[in-house]
Length: 316
Image (cartoon, rainbow, N blue to C red; front, side):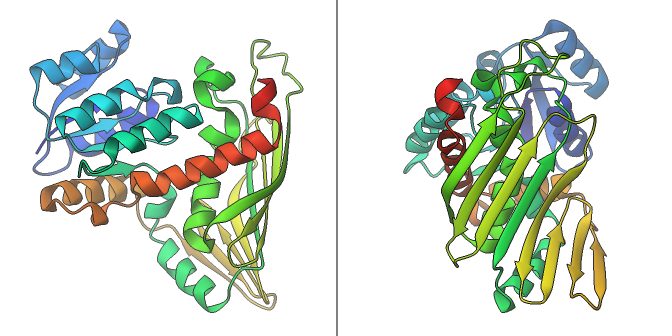
């Protein structure tokens, strides 16, 4: 299968590395607008680098495309791929705003193009047991935390280009919570920008918190901050009757008070989601993807509901 990757940054490089070792897959082009990054990508992976998606699509005929661009760059790329009927895998978040993702969803309607979204927590091999456990012992409270440092990319520090921490990072927590506990509505939210000396130009919130109500009645509390010097917390917890289930990117713990069982992650979820998308394209079966665009859009909407309920979106 001939594939292409649009965006050769950190996450794009991860997918390129996976695809370059996947049997039956040929990378026919990489798009990276900065000339130095394009040259580096071409040299490292031995493929042709292009400066834009238009140039790539004008010269190559990929059967599938990975879209790994910053949040602000979404829109024109997806619309061009939809217009050509080319299946694509898009990294989260769907966009830096609410409307762009909605426009893409409208363009997809009735087209039959296979789309996958990179909510890789869904592809962790620890989650099937979590789903079974929660089906038998429903959660009464859902807790999520993403407490970390501010990422280095300049675009991340601006609301207009990243969507802020809720949209760009904590979206994984909201998506995992939806996937495991069902849909949720926002009851209240708050967010504050205190300002950091290291990033005087930043305009995203430094701290945020949201109160949710899940479909089964569970109360949800989610917090996020980018004020720290490094990663301190990154988890989703489910409080059940006499059971606390904690999901992280490293594994899952089941705490029953008198016993604690830990299950370590046994797969690379990035590899799993990429292979699922490739198989979906090969079989022309959209049900095989780890996360569809329609499902990801529900997470995207929830994140913007949180952002808007906090009042932060209006002031940014």
